Image (cartoon, rainbow, N blue to C red; front, side):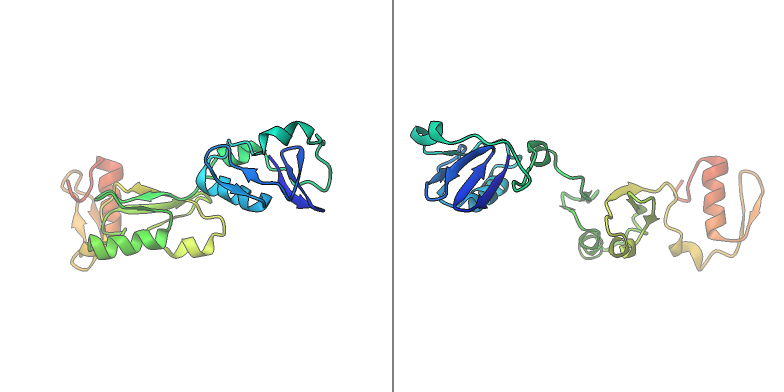
Length: 194
């Protein structure tokens, strides 16, 4: 539907109505004389917007019907019904949810005393980037993130004490904690926690 002020008239849908008339919301008792404030009201209070806007019912028959032209702004109803895909991160420990990677990392640190790395969480961006920090969220202009769990546990906690290890399953000697964790996962389908 289209809502636009033009030369003293308000175009709603394809119906032209005088701007001095009251505009009523079909969903509630909201009344205004401004088409733009009615549009804001519908989007904020009745989303997804399926409402039709009517003027005083006894005068609606006399309104002229117009086809959309170059001066009218067209807003398809489907654009109001379909919510754009946004980042939605939900904490696995509690009921906290947010749309911001920074807020999610702040929540993990202050409420659960952990980090995405220690919790084995990865933020996967729609552009293909995977990270365990919030640095990519500031770099990617259209960043939409999905929260996923890793199968490989946190490595940084054991990195300092790890000096090489021989695998108990196949006797292979590995020099780093990352190589050992990768070997366990790829070769034996287990993790450091198992």
